[in-house]
Amino acid sequence: MNQPVASEAAQEIERLMTLHPKGFDLSLERITRLLEVLGNPQLKLPPVIHVAGTNGKGSCTAFCQALLEAGGHSVHVHTSPHLVNWHERFRIGVKGGRGQLVDDALLADALRRVAAANDGQTITVFEILTAATFLLFSEQPADAVILEVGLGGRFDATNVIANPAVSVIMPIALDHQAYLGDRVELIAAEKAGIMKRRRPVVVGHQEFEAAREVLISTADRLGCPLSVYGQDFSAHEEFGRLIYQDEDGLHDLPLPRLPGRHQYANAAAAIRAVKAADFTVTDQMMEKAMTSVEWPARLQRITEGKLLEFAPKGAEIWLDGGHNPAGGEVIAEAIAAFEERQPRPLYLITGMINTKDPVGYFRAFADLAEHVFTVRIRDSEAGLDPVVLAHSAFDAGLVAEPSASVAEALQEITLRQIPDRPPPRILIGGSLYFAGNVLADNGTPPT
Image (tube, rainbow, N blue to C red; front, top):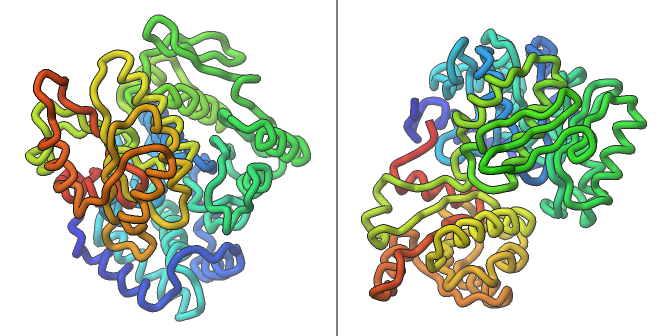
């Protein structure tokens, strides 16, 4: 159920944003104090799957949700940021079905109760939202909670969970260096902060050996039962099927509904995590999860909506929120696979924020994209100027120009079509915030 932007809860959040600082202020002191006033709802949750990582944590969360729901479990899910509506951050479990976005009145009530408990003390809005998450999830019955970290791990507001069913660390890469450090091993150490002594840990695929070593050594030091991708479990494609393997043997599954080879490892981490959380996972659950999983703005094919009227006829349009160099590389790999199967000219329509590495992101597409159109992200003080972003694309070896909007960029691509060439492939992305703008403009917000 889609909630209107001017909903009661959204108005309450806007009010809170005028009272409290924006962004992150990494500390557990304020959230701990607030939760104590609220009666420590984080201690009253069903088993928690706590997910951190630079890339892939949202996809892992989606796979975990699909697996558990395929087994008939009700699952609360917390993710951030949202794409279009605040309600997307809070999905309430439904027995025997897919969780639903939180009811507006329920969220507004939780926010007011949290604000009253805080009593005007210094706190960030993200901490208030996290406290509201714990309040909502503790008061609504469910079999499991999947809790996605907001930023980092060690001092993220979600890291008040003392006894997780499992802690999952997805791929580590350079991102948020101002908060987490400028080397992957420093970032890995921050992410590893969600590990708890003697509680199970699952380490997803790691491109950087330095990050992998930090995660393994931390788990060993804390005495955590540990499962590592490529060592204790793995996944690969064989004859158009996904082969998942762990200590229980080989499992022959459908390829994940989410496109891209990187999703094989994400799916594998989720399977291993749900098992480590002590839930039974059957072949039937895995098969259903692979074909039912949903996660918007992660190589999402746009096949309907208002924006299509501006695009070239027959164009293949993809939306992805990947926003750092490592994310760009896995998206580019997926696009290259599309190109190998069905060649089409590739155009990028990109919007990014100023805390990212646009040159590193664009470099992944240097040998793939014919042209880049850069667009400003709406409603964000951190959105990069399209002219500056176009220069970054030039620095990465691409031809680029600024555009006033996604619709204008699509119209320009339409004008550039050459007879006898196949319709283009268009990748819209560079930021989850930008992806949210696109879904809103298209009239197809997540539900």
